[in-house]
Length: 327
Image (cartoon, rainbow, N blue to C red; front, side):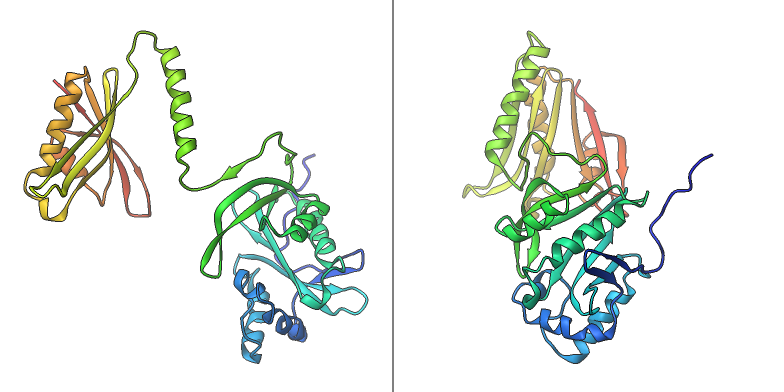
């Protein structure tokens, strides 16, 4: 007999353990929301308003009451089980593929009393009892030792440092990604997710070059190939960059200045790129171009479409893959 999956409920539950109660918000919780508005950080990282205006506070409570019906997730008031006084908020936010996010805030006057730790432990245990939740993720700033310790006490593992990941006010700040759930274990490595990393790019290139050389003995290493067109003053009018390796070549980037478009500059770029590639023994040149870029330009210059990835980078567009055989 197959067990019926235990799925997250479609109505807000009330959870209680270790002196903490997680329940739906009520308008009687306005004093806690009003206190949160005065915190310098809470309004920057949550939807708590930055003003204690009665209307704004009431609207915040209404938004929390509507989260589940909107399909966003569960927004619980963190309450003292003995008095039912609200001391903060904690949420379980629905994502895809069995993943959820969580976050919380506690009013300044009730911090260091264990509310966040007990609330996070209770919410996490309840959520992971359901078959449609596999992993819960939590973010904390690297310098926020209290939040990182709270996550650890609730059974979360630190997974990665995410550089410039989360907007706080008008800046992107680093965050430590924590996870709890099925199959989450302590990793034997340190992970960092960031933007541009020239040193990493160079190391990866060097390692792959070494691997490729070992796998293709007798074949010369890949070489970069660039073409630039400039005017009499030396200003860049057009350029393309790519690579050649064995019988294959690839165009990675092509750009033509607005004033040079329609003058044949783009076609001259391709002609010079292909001439050099042919001299290096290349038989086929590959490239990609989004539909809002220049797939028609490449096709007018002898490239044939071999496939497209629909919906990239947004719905209604596509990433077009093209190739040209060099005679």
